Image (cartoon, rainbow, N blue to C red):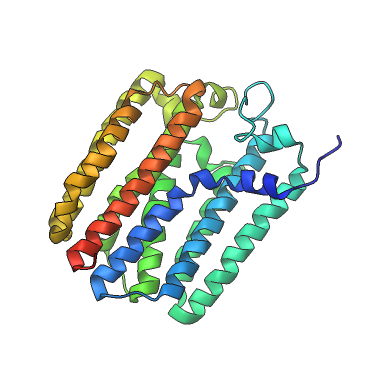
Length: 304
């Protein structure tokens, strides 16, 4: 088979910047949390952790495309959107795509080494856990994404461990309460994966993927999805009310901005034909939650 050369456009499609909210929201919120705790944050370290997170998210997206192509999950018969099956439609060499993922991970690793030099081994340890999850999420004999725990793992890693690493880099300490306060971010990232998996039920079943959505079936999966969407803004309100009370005055504004979007997301059938719209909606909501959470933390500190 003749492969087409990798182009910048292909690399950007593989990196899937439309999904970067899964990393951007948690990092922004973690930066604001650090400022809330100590009144300031090192700008260089913040931007370095942000770029490392975006590079790792891009590597996840690239590896997902690679393994879905290699395992036959993505093929011309079940993948109508060229942006969701880049290898299928652009005829890229799988080895080149794997090399791109290695470059993305390697660059994130180099940033991590500098951060480790500045801040000690704790961020490196968290980064190694994240790197291992990236490699095991779609690859290996028993990929995490092929089982019902995929949403939980992605939520805990991207929405919980990632901001914990950022907070440690910027403040020099973390605790279990901090992890609990990241729950709205964990729930949001998990909902990104859940949205994707509900939309892909018909494609995942023949490929042998036993995701939570496949186990529940579309009707029950949508019921659980709506429940999580309802809990999401309530969890954010709880965290702000108890831990950042001076910022709670911003919460009504958040509900005004996000409420209609959440209601619209609940109305989606989440079939494969709505996948692109559903994913755009849930990633946009993740960014909205992360930015508003950050804003409420800054208002609580008296920084506007």
